[in-house]
Length: 192
Image (cartoon, rainbow, N blue to C red; front, top):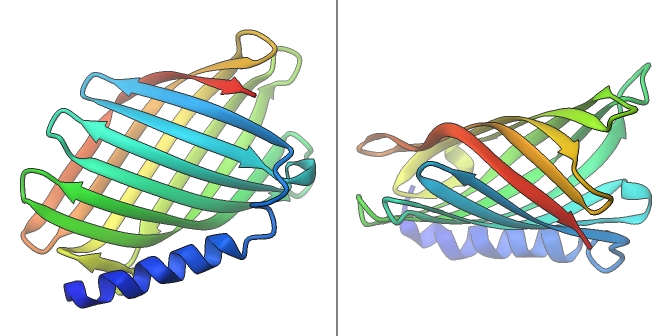
């Protein structure tokens, strides 16, 4: 799609996030750092009353000097038949500056996160996240975006959660597929 749609898409995402009822009423917040062999990602997360919604902002940098800023707004729904299984859904905005191709990409993805408390007593949780941006919602020099993560989380202290997992992030550029990340990661989340 043409670059002329980029400002319109950015304004649309800002409007959605500004109008999110959760944004002004955060009850809890956390900072997160995730490291892989070739990348680092920083995230800020805030939850609404009763953790029924989640607002997040992130910044990703890899050794190729690709920079990706993200923002998401999830709404939580309790999964049927279990209080250990939850589902979150919502939009994720990606703004990327890809160094190798010297190109910019903006995408609005549809995302879902499935969380299962594997061992409730120990607090061990398995989380699967997936995001997909179709061509109609991808602007700049790309047609699609795929972002999939699986990880296991475990509390280390009352305010620190450790995690380990795997992430695959890929852009379908006009010149071919561009793998941004496909590797194992480890990290910590600090609850404020």
